Length: 451
Ligand code: PMP
Image 1: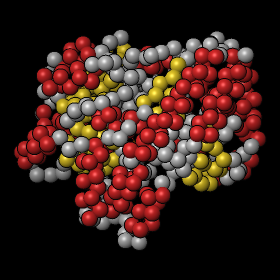
Image 2: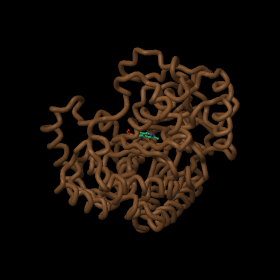
Image 3: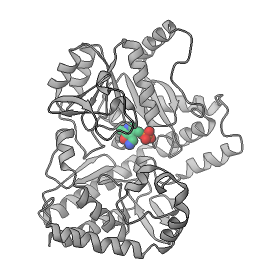
Image 4: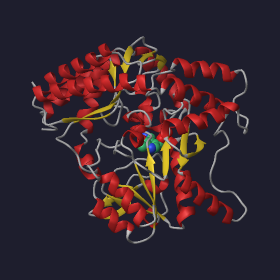
C-alpha cells in the first residue's frame, strides 16, 4: 500500500492516464522530438523535465485561469506558474501597463515617476519598509541576507529544515539526526554550507533558541508558513517566539512572503500582524513580470546605512543590471493598485475555502488517510495524515508516485495543478465552476484509486 492505495491499482491507474495524456498531444510530441535537442537536457529550464506527464505540453496561450496548448487542449489552471501568475494570466491592468511602457523603453538604469508611485504603493500594501527592487525572490533573499550579515557582523543564517527560499546557496542545509548538514543533491557544491548556515525544525522554538544562543546567527530566514514541502502551519505563538528570540540574541528576522502572499492583502505579515526586520516578496508582486521586492524597517534601514558607510570602497555584491527597470515599475503600479485589491482577495479566499472544503469532503468519503491545508488562496491536499509540524514530517508525507499519477489524472480531466507538490491557487479570474470541476475530478480519481 502507498498512502492507503493498493500498489497494483495505482500502477494500473498511472499507466492508463499516461496513455490518455500522450494520445491527446500528438503535435507537442512531434514538435518536442524535433525542437528540444538545442536545450541542455532537452528543456529550457531543467526542472521542466520533472513534470510527471509522459512528455510536456507546449503552451499556445493563457488568459485568466485558463491555459491552452498547441494540441488545442484547454485546462483550468490552478498551478498559475507556481504563484508567478497567482493574480491570473495577463491581468488586464498589467497587460495594459506593459503595452504602454513598451512604447517608452524597456530598461534605463534610471527611475521613473512610476517608480516613486510603486514605492508609495508597496508601503501602503505591505507596511512601512524601505524598499529595493530585484528581479527574482532568490536575489531579494540573497541581498537581504547580505544586509543582515553587514549589520550584525555575524556569519550564519538560521533556516528551517525542508525550507526553500530560491537558489540561495546558504539555505541548502538540512537536519540529520538533529545535526545541520549540507543538503544532499546540490550540484557542484564544494563549500561547507554549515559554516554559514544552521538548520532547525519549524515550530521548535527550543532548537531555535539553542542555535541563536551560540551568538553567530545574523538572521532567521523563514516563510510564515512552510509552503515548499507539504504545507506546515505555524503553531500558535511560534512567530511571536521567533520575534522575541531573534531580538534577544541580536539576529534579524527576514520574512519571505513569496508564497504566503496568498494569505490576503499585505501577505501573512499584515494579516497576522507579524513584525519582521526585512520583508521579501517576489513572483506575483508585479502581476507576473519578473520582479521581487525587499524592504527594511526604519530601524534596520538606519543600521544598514551605518554599515554601508563603514564599508571599504568597492562592489557591494548587491544588485543586477536589469533590476528596477521601468517595465517592472509600470507593472508594480498596475498590480498593486488595480489587481492586488481587497475585492480580488475576497474572491480568492471564498473560492479557496470552497475548494478546500470540497477536497476534504472527498477525502473523508473515500476514507483516505490524507488531509487538506489552506493558506488564503493557496490550497494543498497532502497524501498523508495531518497536521504536519515540521519539515521532517513534511518530507515523509510526500508521496511522489501517488502525486504524479493524480496530477496526470487531473490534467486528463481538465485541471492543471502545481507539480512537485499538490498545490492549487485561486486567482481573481478563477470561476466557481472551475473549482467544482476540480473537486469532481478529484472525486473520480479517488473513486478509482480507493475502490
Ligand atoms: N522564496 C520562496 C518561499 C519560494 O517558494 C521561492 C520559489 N519557489 C523563492 C523564494 C524563489 O523564487 P524565484 O525562483 O522566483 O527566485
